[in-house]
Image (cartoon, rainbow, N blue to C red):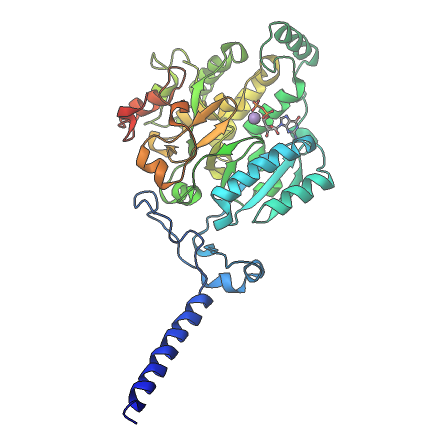
Length: 393
Ligand code: GDP
Ligand code: MN
């Protein structure tokens, strides 16, 4: 009978252990728990949200971490044709796997024609947030009345003969004008504060540890990039002249501490053709909808260079960011490994790449190569090259 009390103790310990086991399994466990967190990158790390227990999607399969409380009012946005569906599927998959499966941000798809059922079905199945499909109003994807369409047609022929990339394409010009001046005012975009542009056929190389939307909001950033380079001059011969006219007409819009040093080597007389590559962008929709930006776009649109030349939305967004924003409102996301043919941004810094499980080859990183403008961005902002650059060419 001397064993009696010991047996009760055993029961008590077993009971206690069982209780802990059961109660732990009832707590939603963040999917990324146990991964090595880099303190600087993950400073706004994840907390389980009580609302995840009421979410219908959390009841099927493994418990999901849904940090709704920390979610910014933001969306992914894609301009695409129905024929882009499979290349878009790849892009969505990479964005979901590396980031959005933990956040469930919405995704807005825009098209100059209605999306077909296949496009909607495939993309909705892949996105973990809500999806919205919008048709672009005709007046945002057609010629303004002041454009001489015969002149525009001749330009396309000439640029085609010169083998200028997309030089002969009419739809590419409408696309560039739309991305420059209209996507952020589509009715589906009006409820959001921030956007992340995603194109077909892109790849993300690293886990996105902290939320770029939150980073933008909390640090008052308005525009961001991962790759920068020089524009093909023949597509933009009069863009800088038109920009100078705008600056003279609207000196009140020009930020005092701007990034002119990124855009020009001679204090603004000429454009050095540096631009942020706009197929990746995380930015503020409110900035694009501001009077400053709209006045700039309208000056460009009146000048006709979207059709009489082949102005790209990348130099347009970049010049706007460079002259209308304060330097510190433009952000470089080193930690977002990214590919869009033919360039790679592979984060600089070996420890960062390991922590974020990057699968890019650092030798492919374009940032510090001659045709990239990213070194210039660092100089203009008095920034040190990211740690690790010393050993990377
Ligand atoms: P690139 O990256 O400059 O070579 O150009 P893309 O072909 O990738 O086009 C840029 C973006 O615009 C992509 O998201 C395309 O899906 C989209 N896009 C291009 N042309 C059209 C078009 O005529 N209609 C629609 N709806 N989307 C287009
Ligand atoms: Mn593209």
